[in-house]
Image 1 (cartoon, rainbow, N blue to C red):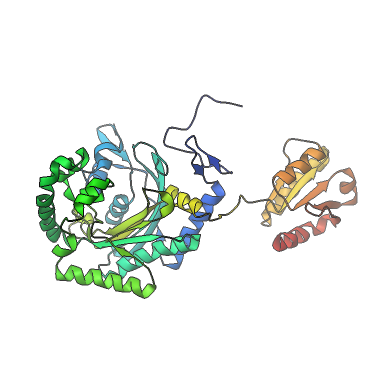
Image 2: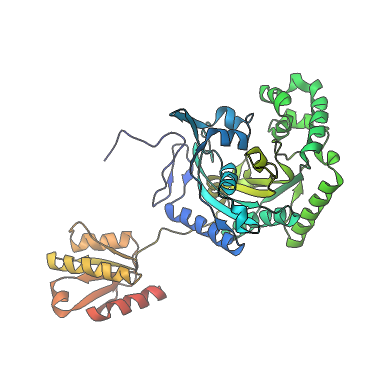
Length: 435
């Protein structure tokens, strides 16, 4: 069986079994995705977070403001289009949509701090590469309404708890403070003054950033630019006392939790509404592009999106595809594809109808039941039961119907037992519980 259609470049199918794409990257099976998503949801439940789901389609202006008009995402990577004079975009991230929803629906009136989490797809029109796709998936949290350092520390603690619950270790947490926008503006001037003499040595991208957004140069992965930056002024030297106290408190809270971190004075978020704490989580299994998740405080974003007053906020976003790469690199075993509790093999039309009815009855009792839908031979059905790794196969034919007792075969040992029809549910439920 073949088709001339294939998935769009930079996207992928999630199948019942793991598979490898053209570039040799393993794509996790749907059961593995469900396992990771269930783990995320459990961690969120334990940390008292509530789920929010926003549309994948948002106004272009929201994203341009939320992400920043000068960023590569807005300049080069948005899937944007127009319909009836309205500009739309497939969301490239989820923080701005969450803040939009918070403001639109007046979630602050619910009372208290709003602790929200999300899991969903995002879209960026970038060149696909290992762990980076045009449609990708993020999970993350946004804590809205709390300006205390404890909110920053808890945000980081939630991220570390997800990784711990998944069995992921060997992580590196980078931490920094951005201070206030006013302090950062002074620092930007000092950074520009420092870099101007090196302008001819900078890459075209960094020269462009030198004029528009110098802080982004600190993100460079080019070795010669990193060498230049070794002697550059650091943001912490421009941070005021209040911000230093906030940062020191966050570090102290992380120390209390036993969360290890490395202070990185070059770790920044290059947009004006980011404030105070910023962090990034790395895993060596991801190679040179080692970032697994990132986040920080963004107290000015609500105002950028139209709020009359600032809304203190902090959060993180993590890439699901990059998380799977890290899990693979660490040889972490995830959930296998679910297997049936029992496979029903039926011979003859009357037995097939009985098997069909019984399958529905057993499923109504919570059992995972598989059966043949092709009218194949008993040999073929037993082969299918083995393929699906069913621990038990219930065989029904004319003799079983007449005796009103099914033949139940334990597939591993080959042992068989006659089980009366009226005792099947109890018998199979018991075997499923002990399997």
